[in-house]
Image (cartoon, rainbow, N blue to C red):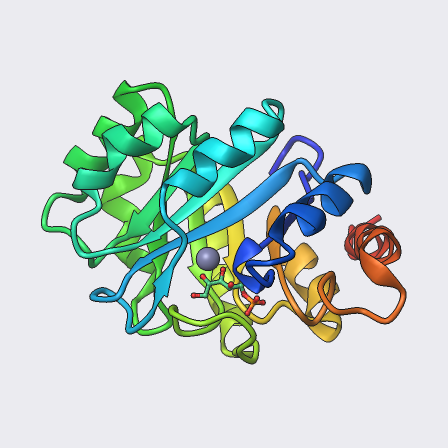
Length: 230
Ligand code: DX5
Ligand code: ZN
């Protein structure tokens, strides 16, 4: 990117205990976090269920300035667009292979005033997104197979991230690049250097760290910045 590379810590709320969700969000907010990654899983696209759209509305009611980064893992993404708009979602992403009508769905997300994102699974070629680039604000590169929090980062993702960044440079498009799944310390700087902007964080970085959420977020911010090429 020509502009200063945006680096954002975006905790994945799927890592919170449902009984501690409110406290976790409060601590993230007080630590300066403004982006929150909300996974929506329908039990069909992936073999798991996760948050309802309602969580987006609840988050925005309490923290109107929060940026809700919604990751849909559902078989019918178009059906969620209007409910997500009503809930106040900011970024809405769906998997490239979850609909026959990718461009129509990306446009529908933008038409109601939200930012549109496309998600790539580890099994997909990065190039799959090339026809969609005029309609995307965000590309999410899955660095684990989708469906569960707490999995291990797939190192094969690094050359894929590089390829995605090159595609961005080559086409001159200005979408953000998000990496989602198993983000851990050995891979933060390599991902910064390969152009990642949004780091969806979980148990290896900001959750369940011995020194608590504020210290963990501070450490993560520092680590991201260290990866910037001078
Ligand atoms: C996996 C989800 C991720 C996950 C974050 O399907 O999309 O958002 O919660 O990754 P972890 O918590 O595993 O680092
Ligand atoms: Zn996710």
